Length: 504
Image 1 (cartoon, rainbow, N blue to C red):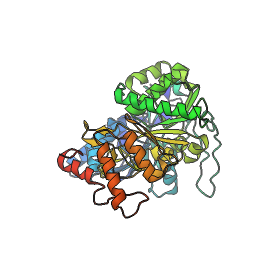
Image 2: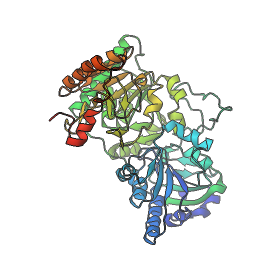
Image 3: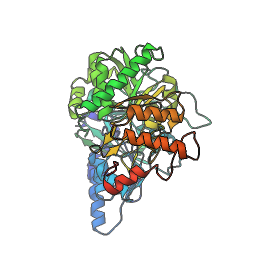
Image 4: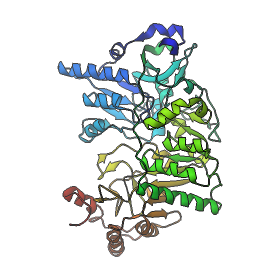
């Protein structure tokens, strides 16, 4: 397998996962590669989890602080959480085992805007970084690193860590080489300068990661697949949401507010977002571009259909079938994809400059358009804000999408008041459910409430919302955004007490 390690000076550091994991000490901060189930280390974290379990069994405490790009896979987040090995986690976690421990208060979780992680690491406010574990697809003769299926915060981790452990994963297609664009021009104020990227397909860096060879303390060779989950086939709800979004975009083109090929699209991760991407295959926008966080199945469909000219992201988020399709045709895809560090893929300056069309999911929205994308019933973390805040506030058009109900109709996604707010109403321009689309641009709060209730709420909940809005106008402390504080969160309380937001 050493054909992936062309630097002869580094071959002496090849070792096994157990030996590499033994270099990590209790209480350290460990940063790893990985973004939405792509490009994360698989073997060393599992060896570390085994070591932690043995330490706990002997009565010795052993936990680490864990930093990543975003979510990873069960061999990393899941394995470490299962043995109570994580003290603090940032900036995003999608693992179900870790989620339960976070919600039980057993892991301290810092839910962060993804674009802010690298700058904060450089500022030093997150504390020192002891060890980085980074998956790469190869090491070149000069010691530079060929990134794998995600870039995330790898550049920052390699720069800031005291020690670096590399996993060289032969499963990653060798044809990935050349797809990446690693920009080393970011700085902290007052040395910060504009980022010279003006089109989604601009390349402003190098295809390779740099790492001081003296920092590299271990190299582990692996052959392990990424663990991305399949997307559900679009159901009637997803198709209806996609139809509303595409109709809206066509309307914006017809009014001259968007060009015929649209502006660069950004899409959050999930079944609804992927259904919208797939629906764009038959839409009249050609040729599109994408400037986003992740390349999903739907973007491969768009590339195959010739509808998408190119896609810029920081990682793949593909079903196993789509990952196999990508790897089988990597050479053909490579010139139409760019993977960048997430501080570039999610950079607010670039999102604003390029005029991205942001399309993201939500947990709930209130009648005024405030959006909760993280906390179920206001307190239980689902995953995290991810990059939605980076894009929504800075987008040319900010769209949020959701089915109008959840839990078989027991929860309304449209509520009198959001139980937690990640995106204030000033950052939310369009809300879409299968019921319809509410264009909230240029509307006052009371006008927004009327549009959201009439066009987005499920019929089972629409009369209740209209009744609340009417009574709020008659009894609110102020009439700018009428509210009844004693009643505003009563739907959430009813659900927690009875299992449904609907009155008995």
